[in-house]
Amino acid sequence: MTIEFDGRVAIITGAGGGLGKTYALELGRRGAKVVVNDLGGNPDGTGAAGGPADTTVEEIKAAGGEAVANYDSVATPEGGAAITQTALDAFGTVDIVINNAGILRDKSFLNQAVADIRAVIDVHLLGAFFVTQPAFKVMKEKGYGRLLFTASSAGVFGNFGQANYGAAKMGLVGLSNVLAIEGAKNNIRSNVIAPIARSRLTEDILGPLVEMVEPELVMPLSLYLVSEACELTHELFSVGGGKFSRVFIGESPGWFAGKGVQPTVEDIATHIDEIRAEGGYSVPGSANDDIRLLLEALG
Ligand code: NAI
Image (cartoon, rainbow, N blue to C red; front, side, top):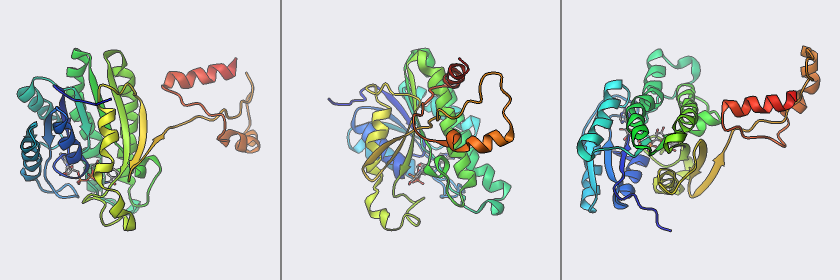
């Protein structure tokens, strides 16, 4: 089978370099019309420049594709709205949004200043709201949409020195899960990746892995997830170095105290291993699914 994007309009935030650029180039090659958003600042979120977005656009065009640059910051409602407006003005619609723009302000928790916390949450988490909301409106009206969010193992599993980043990244998992449910009846699918790739954000911290995790090795899964061929939604994947894995939040069968029984604190201590045991888990697809599991236990 061949996966094509002919006629599809894709917004990719932070597509001036790193992972986002690999998506933009390949989407352009495969027939999509691409909005290349990039603020063009420093890895810590300071500064701005048009060069990176322009370079990606030039490369797409040189390869015969269609693309337009946008230099707005994702981190404001006005910026988010302007990004979708760029897609509407240039190409008339929007089918795909890849939320990829990102910055880092790594410091251990007690050293994170309010500005470090705000800057990171503004770009990653609020930025994804601001970019996706106007696009979601268009997608709902047209009955088609593919959303991809970029989380991180730093949030999904935790990492030293990344409280701001980890919280923002895990927030994106929650956002995607809700949009998967809200978008379902309008054929809008929403998924998340937690990538590992060499980029300016990671080349100093990946150690020997740095030579084996080209960003191009993440791209195939990201493009599959935003393709028409992909019916998956509400999912999360770990991807890097050519390895592709699903990550999911499972709920163990746990321990049931019994209908109408008031358990004591000591009962919890007694049954804690049963509560924590990993076998026989379910993967709820929604909060309602979680309530269904409780109703089943209550008989
Ligand atoms: P990168 O620094 O090459 O790409 C991020 C891009 O986002 C940059 O081009 C930057 O100019 C742009 N950007 C930053 N703030 C922006 C804003 N406010 N508005 C618009 N554009 C903005 O780094 P990389 O690694 O390609 O990162 C892409 C995404 O992947 C980020 O969200 C990052 O947190 C995430 N990620 C990357 C991992 C890795 O191993 N490279 C690991 C886990 C997550």
